Image 1 (cartoon, rainbow, N blue to C red):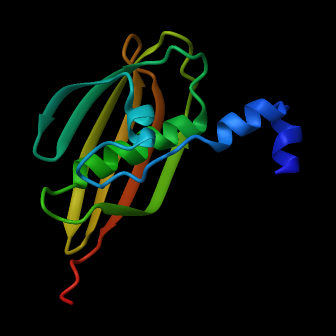
Image 2 (tube, helix red, strand yellow):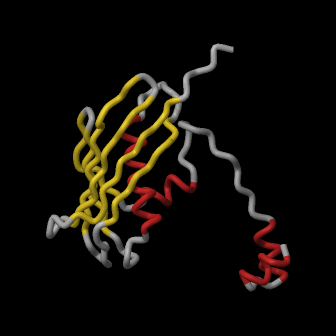
Image 3 (cartoon, one colour):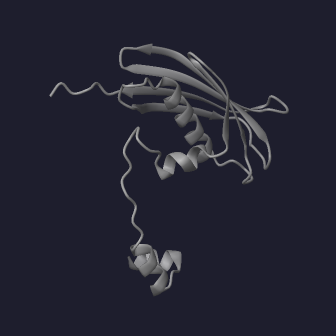
Length: 152
């Protein structure tokens, strides 16, 4: 706690206020978590068809961090491979090639394709491009595993 106090430079009153914050656990598939809402804010879904999702996103924060790009690739791949009524997919391999930067107010196109599904393993390919120029910002491949429901 002392390290956190020093790093965050919070007063005793601010620390007390933070310690009273209640974060309730969220129920999967019932409500969105803070992370999900934060991670997908600003994404507009343009087209959905079996095996394909096409979205646009406008970066309003400046250079889009590599972690944010990785998150977009992981989220889109997981959404694309998700099947209603089945357990949530777990990413087991994420490979990303970063090719250029996304600058403030660049409108980005995100295209996710289902590459294949064999049993409980799915593979997706996600490409992020600048809408104005077509320049590729990042290309990712996501392999996911779907847990089997317990028979117990």
